[in-house]
Structure formats: structure tokens, C-alpha cells
Length: 442
Ligand code: SF4
Image (cartoon, rainbow, N blue to C red; front, side):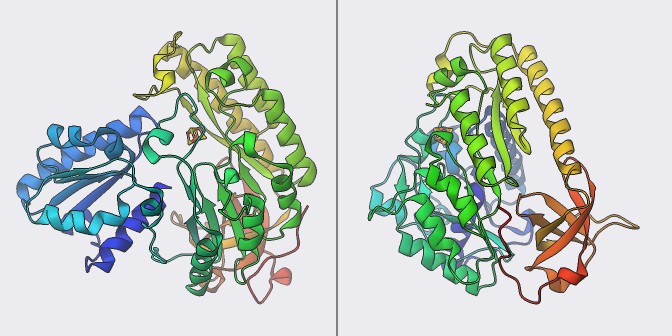
């Protein structure tokens, strides 16, 4: 979401005549787009602003701005804390960035945060502006109505608001014309998408997948309680829908899930995992896990480990709980000792790594359809690959090949597997002359 918001900021500024700087040292405007989902992310913002303030002493014309969730959360406090900061603007103000920057350049110090009327919130979208590439994001909704007890997003991003399907499909058509092949539909909870005329998220997926030139469609992120039978069927029915779902579990303990206000149980979650695999045996499932939530004891943690064994995730993002100001979880009793949280996290991550490696090793020898995204960013000397791409299950694959394959879906035989990536070689006899969706595996 933040990457896409940064592109939107760049789009509005470009329209007003600003040009991107190749690096920080050549810029006369630096906007830090921020995340406050965990304390560590917020602390990084403060240390970066502090460093740039020092830089500003050497370059007094430099305009410094903070945007995004930390801006929305802290507002004026940031201007007070950092005298060198010129501008603070919140998550709803992206469409106003050019005017705000003009005022900052004229010498004003501004903080603009807080909610906007719905119509103004969705007006911040320009039809098209992206960094060039093969894959791109399309925002389909903003905000979240779920109020998980640990999460700042509903307070900072506002209530759920869905973009009209015709606007979304128009944006996707423009992207395909510009050469993008893979589109990821994004929102805080995409599977609760419902348009004004009643189109559900699976309906939107069918609409987007049917646009000529969309080789592959993805989405993120999904709340397990809103994973409907219709959406599960979509994996079997839509050939160019990627066989991957990110389904944040957050805990394997019903007691902790209730304290998190997640509104599903471990049994509900595992039932949905089973249904997904029944509909689409090849599907890759990844998750998020919070370890050390207030009140989590050793039996609760064992339930989380048990969920990991049963669900066998392809991968996960896991962190020790970080209390966020203004959330209910920040005031819950029973904080878990930091040392216990870190110990449990290591146990979880070590086991996840083993499972990921086992799953990836099982792919060796099989042929996968890989969308070639570009040049391998970290080629090494000798036998290493020069291209990088992703399987339908979102596994990164490095492979040798010519640059004209970039943007094409190519059959690749997997030859080596590690935790974070695979290696492979092109199956020449299967290469299709045109990019495009291939047969469904499920
Ligand atoms: S569904 Fe996601 S974004 Fe919404 S409150 Fe819960 S964790 Fe936050």
C-alpha cells in the first residue's frame, strides 16, 4: 500500500513539473513515506528525519516532508520535534501534495492530517503513473473496518471505501497498454470489497482477469473471516489468477485470537486452508504471525506452533508484538517478557524456515510457469542466473536467459531450491511465442 501511495505522490508532483532525482544528494525535496504498524518502523522514521535534518544544515533550500501513517498519527508533534521539517501530511492528503509542497517552498511549515469526506478520499487517484516494470499494484479500496485490537490502520486510514469497478478496470487497461503484465489488486482487506452496485471481490477478480493482456492477477491482503466459498472457487475457475494467497492468521490460540478481535477461531482458519487446498492443490499459502501478544502463555504459543504444523505455510512474516499508541491491545494486561517473545519468535521462525525449505525442495524437477520480471538484482560470478521471475505461487526464481523474455510467462524447470528463492532452466520445447495465461493447474 505504501509503495503505491509513494507512486501516487510522485504522480501528483510530476504533473506539477517536479522531476525525480537520481539520488538523495541531488534532491531539493525529500518526502519520507512512513509506516507505523510496528514501533521499529516508526523509530526508523525518526532516525532518518534526524539524519536528514543534519544534511539540511549544509543544504538550507532542501524541503523535508513526512507523509503516511506516522504523519497521520503524530501531526504537529513532528514539526515540534524536528525544527528542520517543513511539511507533514497524512494518509488522506496525497491528492493535495503539490499545493502543500508549493507552500513549503514559499516558507510555510505545515501539518495537514485528519479524515476527508469519502468523495475527496477517492479523488486522490490519478489515472496512471508508475515506475516502469512488469508487475504493478492497483488500489481497489482504502481503509479498514475491522478494528483488530493491536492495529492502528482503521484509526489512521479511515473506514473502508471501495473504488468503482469501472475506474479500476480502466486503470488496469491503461497499465496493460503501457506494457505491464501482472497486476496486484491491493487494499487492507480486499475480500470485503463491494462496489456501490453490489459487485463482490470475486466478481471484481473475474472482471480484472478478463481484461486482455493481464497475464497474471494477484491480490493482497485478505482477512480470513471474509474468505468466501466464492473466492475459494475463484482459484479453480480463473486461469490467470495466481495460485497464492496471503492469509494472515496472527495466532493459533483461540484465546489470543479473541483478544485480538480477529473474529475467527483456529478451527475456522484451518477449515479455510483445507478448502483452499481442496479447490486448488498447488496453492501457496503465506501468513502473518504476531508472537508474544499480551496474555499469550506457553500453551497459547504451542497452539500457534500446532497451527503452523497443520497449515504448513509456504512462508510467513512474523514479529514480536509491538504495542501501538491508541490501540486497545496497548492497554491489555499480561505483557509478555521481551526475552520470552524473542525466544518464541525464534522457535517459530526456525520451524517456518524448515517447512519453507521442504516445500521448495519438493518443487525441484517440476516445470513452473514463471513470469520473468527482470534482471537478477544480485547476479554472482560463474554459473549464476541473469534473470529473475516469479512462479504463480509467488516463489522467486533465478534463471539464465535472454532479456527478451522479460514480461513473458515462461516454462521453467526448477533445478535448485533454498528458503528464499529457486533456480531453474527454461524448458525450450515448451516456450510459447506469446505471453499470456496458460492452463489452470487446479
Ligand atoms: S484487518 Fe488488517 S488492517 Fe484491518 S484492523 Fe485488522 S490488522 Fe489492521
